[in-house]
Image (tube, rainbow, N blue to C red; front, top):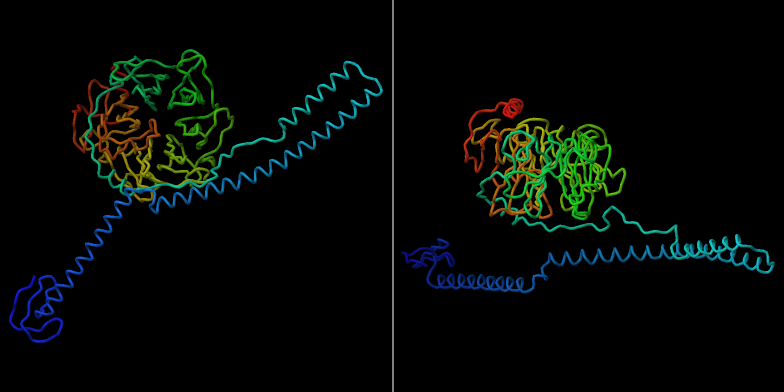
Length: 532
């Protein structure tokens, strides 16, 4: 610890003595004070060891009794307060119901007394016939029914949340997700045989749904049909098309209603949303009429959300409703926070907040439940290509950490926005339109399934790809198939149906070759048409 020096001033007693240097504090000590200094350091070490042992004991206690933590106590307190609030409100409703019931009983009793008086009178006067008996019998039946089921009293549910929810948020989990890097490769599972209407072809595929068997259901828009592709199949099966009683006309999205075991389809040009039973094709139902629908989804409570790009709004319906409830927009076309401009794809999180790809305003909006206006979570700084801007955004998905992933279609890139940030992060692309290894060409709607597979739907490229990602963790297990990929996986696959031309981006590297250059969508479409 210390080395002897010639005589020097002791740091403690300030006397000239033979001193020893402490390498830790670089001071000079005489021998007695050096001993004291050493004892003091040893005491401090013992204190650290004691703190260490106490902390070790705390860890053991936390592992043995995890419910004793302060955060658990906060949840317990929230639970107790919520139960008390429910009990208090229930007691108030019981009192109200008892008062109303008593009034109803009094009214029935009054009618019963009047009926009894009339029965007594006709019996004493002996003046009655069959019609009188029918009248009395009907009257008695009516007041009996009123007593058992009062017509003026009923119980209705309230669509507004009664108890304020709480959330558990982990910054550790967010850090781990951002650190994750994924190794992925793509294989063709749907299409890839050019632009057309054959069973092995697609024509502007839009929304998709993936079932538990990994079968893919596609809104094959310009072919006016819904097609099903089983995993590893080389062609699809038409589930419903424009023939027969369905008459589909440019369907743009599809989702699945587990409660009714049926598909919900956005039949855009027919201006309707239909319910289609795969096992009973003749039992088609029109759920919503006269709506320029584009994107749709269904939440955990069975509410159907639909974007209306003509009225610039999003509404939700409980099946059987005629008008629906306004969720977002509805204040005309515009860019104010209570307005939308051509809303397309939508996403619903576990709290029933609605995320809307506000295409005409070049932004993504978040409307929390029952809000009068939305907040901007991506873009909103005009059309442009800076990291603060978007250009005609389409597919959108939000993970449980509030990170928004959006296909920035006009800028040929996929962006990720953390909630509250002024600018986003370019996940893939962003180097102009083209076919180089660091470029994209009008990315549209890559998709995630809730399994370990990822699907992408590309309108102009006429192909859907399956990404096998063994290390992938689903963003939200409640999500069946949202409309945008997680750029955090650092891949995107662009597929061209012009005969085996495929580009896969993985960490910015060109994995599979691409031949030829396509300058714009029109030339691409014309090229496909000429090859048919």
